[in-house]
Image 1 (cartoon, one colour):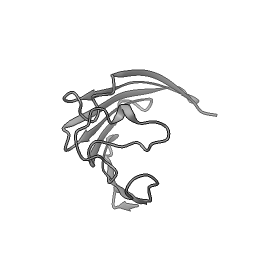
Image 2 (cartoon, rainbow, N blue to C red):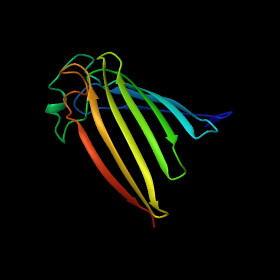
Image 3 (tube, rainbow, N blue to C red):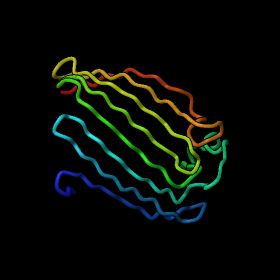
Image 4 (tube, rainbow, N blue to C red):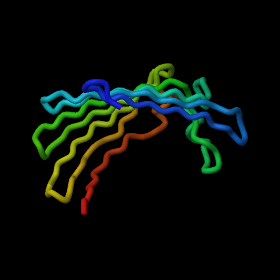
Length: 149
């Protein structure tokens, strides 16, 4: 919903697990768009299934039969988007593992080449000490196009 000009959202789920303890997940977020095309957003995520300890092998041992776990329970995301022109947008997303002190950056830029096609370039960059939540993931750079019809 909205509170004046601020967008508010939240969700929670209680999960009954087959092979481990039941767990709770919840997220809460807000966003605000300024009249000058700047939009700011923030979100908090709690993962009750997290190992709640440092475990560098955690991401490497997940199989399709196992649920995805995180090392720590508390994550915060912050996003800043700015419309440079009506056709060109810049976006910076950061995801922070509060307890493990690592974060994940996603700078991105998109441009509307045509009314029916957008082109996007960006990067996924983990930052933090070795063995933290995100540093097991290598840097990734991408180019993407989106077609509307």
